[in-house]
Length: 311
Image (cartoon, rainbow, N blue to C red; front, side, top):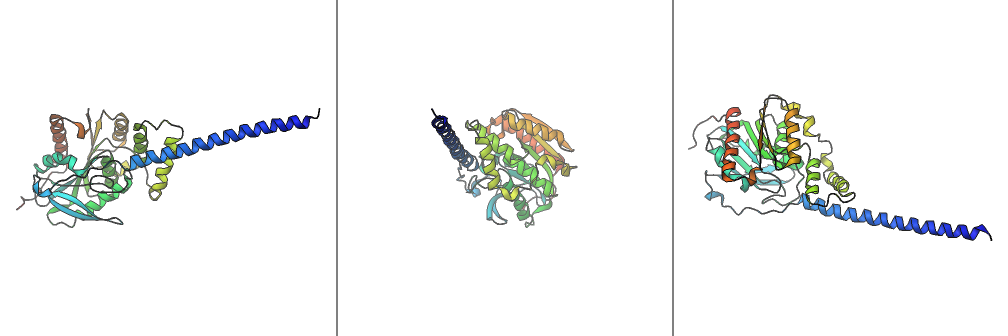
């Protein structure tokens, strides 16, 4: 019998197996792409719950104050007055949060005569859109400082910043670029937005699926390719030599806990380090008061208010 028919049978079988493997690979690729796209969308568009707050009814006599973000337009913030020509502390809320969630910290700082300013980041609170997990948010914080310098009732040369996770990244990143930020308190900070993205993907429970994390990372970098030259914070902390820094760990966030501790160890002085068992938004009233007292003490030590009482 000629070997040719047998060879044809073998080749046909091999082609069928290869076709099946190719189809399986294509299915896995399409499934991973679909799941990754869904995960990326979920992380970059966290649920928003705009605060229905009448600013005129808030304690501390705040007013709305708008500032301009280049390429984005106007953004509204809340300005809480302290002493005239005192420094201003800008509070940067965390991921999935909003400005109304940190009003008690505003009160604690304003009681010690600081001016206080807060606003919603893109994709949070009253601001629609997609978060960049720190890139765009840094530019928004810098724009807030440039907007506030138009006021005549503050010290335009001295600012302090507090931030949590997303806000903490923006605070450190902005301080590296803006010399008027003279004191920084960061709670649960991370080195670069991609780190935080992978943490959030992991929290969904789907991050362990094949290729999901890698595809999410590729998609995130494509969406934010204009920031491809931005270096990790760890590589730039040397620029904050001489700027007082307070690093706060929240042990209920072990991944951020490690990054915060590492960043504290790498950062130049002056610097300090605190450990809390919970994030600020989840603390009891007593725990929150203790936390706020520590933040106020830090800013009083390194950015003491000076000026005259508001009229």
